[in-house]
Structure formats: C-alpha cells, structure tokens
Amino acid sequence: MPEWEIHRALVIGLLATSVVVLVSLLFLTAPYGRHLRQGWGPTLPAHWAWVAMETPSVLVFAAVYFWGDNAWQLTALILLGLWQLHYLSRTFVYPFRLRNRSQRMPLIIAAMAFLFTCVNSYVNARWLTHFGEYPDSWIKSPAFIIGAVLFLLGFIINQHADRVLLNLRKPGDTRYYIPTGGLYRFISCPNYFGEILTWIGWAIAVWSMAGLAFAVFTIANLLPRALSNHRWYREQFDNYPVDRKAIIPKLL
Ligand code: NDP
Image (cartoon, rainbow, N blue to C red; front, side, top):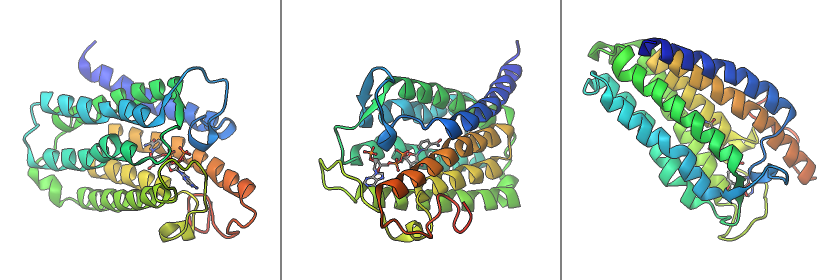
C-alpha cells in the first residue's frame, strides 16, 4: 500500500474516531482529574502520565517533520515552531506545575492518548514536509495569517486559563475552588476554549485534512468535557455564578 493511502486512511480514521469520541463522551465522562473514579484498572501518577502521553507530540512530530524533503522551507519551519511552542509547554512544563502530585490517571486513558498523539503527530508532520506544499508565498495568504493569529490567541487563552487553575491551589492541596478572572467571568472552561481555538487556527493555517481532523477531534474531546465540568461546578458550589456558561460565552 503506498504511503499516501496509509496517510489518507489514518486521517479518515481520526475523523471517524472523533464521531465515536463525541458520542461516547456525551454519555460517559472520561475518568481523569475531578472525574476520576474506581473501576478503570491500574493508574499512574497524573503528572508522569501527561509527560508520557504528550511526548510523541514533540518527538514523533519532530522526527517525521525532518524526515520530509521540505523540512527547511520557511513556511513549514514557522508551522513547526507554532506546534512545538504549544507542545513543549504541554509536555515538559505543564505537568511539573500541577500542584496535586498525588493525583492519578488510569493507564487506559494515558495509553489511548499516547496512541492518538503518535498518529496525530505523524499525519500532521508528514503533511507539512512531504505531502503538502508550503511555498514562501503561503506566509502572505489569508489562511496562514488568520490561522496563525487564531493559533496564538488560543495559545495565550489556554496558557492563562491553565495558570489560573494551577494557582488556585497551594502545593499539596487537593481541594477545588471557583476560578475567577479573564474568560472565567463568562465560561467554566476557558482552557478548553483556548485549546479548541488553537487547533482551529492550526487547521486554517495548514489548510489540510490532517489539520482539520485534529481540530475536529479536539472539539469532540473537549466540548463534552466542558459540559461535564460545568455541570460538576454547579453541583459542587451553591454560589457558582449563574450566568457563567460552559465553553462558549453567552451560548453554551
Ligand atoms: P482541568 O481543568 O480538568 O484540570 C487542570 C488542572 O487544574 C488539574 O491539575 C486540576 O486538578 C486543576 N484544577 C482544575 N479545576 C480546578 C479547580 N476548580 N480548583 C482547583 N484546581 C483545579 O484540565 P484537563 O486536565 O482536562 O486539561 C489540562 C490541559 O490539557 C488543558 O489546557 C486542556 O486544554 C489540555 N487538553 C487538551 C486535549 C486535546 O484534545 N487537545 C485533551 C485534554 C486536555 P485535578 O487533576 O486534581 O482535577
């Protein structure tokens, strides 16, 4: 089977998986973080699980990227920089800022995420430097400019929202608090909102089915979780702000 057919099959697989993930997560909240519960098999320390499941997004992506013939083209290098900006932080900074070091994550969740990040990194990196075409003129295209701006905006929102959550606790604290400030004034999960914006920006900037599949998967994964987190906040806190929505200000 030629490689382009394998690549296409994996992209279609990611899109099909997104549908399964969306429908499943609307009925079953993924058992990690505040939704961790018994019955999901062996668990790992959550911060190490984050490092393990996100490492392919840095290493597999970089290896596949530099395997391609177009790795030294300026546009592709800028896109590599955007991707690694997000994933170096997610993989090697974020996990070590988690305050609750006793938190666990089911091995099955980490294993599924690991598999996803391997496939997703391959399809996106291979498109950038092998199957796709990104001449220098692409940098001036509306798709690249709009996509890169959305990516960076999403990155800033996601970083800020994660920082607010992590600063709610002192080291060792395991309690939950009502987050405030920034987009928390309007929605319960600006971290997911920022993450979704990031990958929509990516999909627009790279203008490929691989990028689209990742954006669709991120929405399928994080939209139901935002609804679950929002429901959870309302159940836990009597004084939870009544006009705060789950993930889209004033709407959802
Ligand atoms: P959460 O919001 O569930 O938790 C983030 C961290 O903050 C955890 O350490 C959590 O503790 C703590 N925390 C959360 N809410 C509170 C609160 N109210 N009071 C005190 N501490 C709190 O985020 P996720 O773990 O689901 O995701 C983390 C990051 O990873 C996000 O930026 C997200 O966008 C990204 N992500 C991306 C995905 C994708 O598909 N691209 C998939 C999943 C995540 P505890 O663990 O104890 O609950």
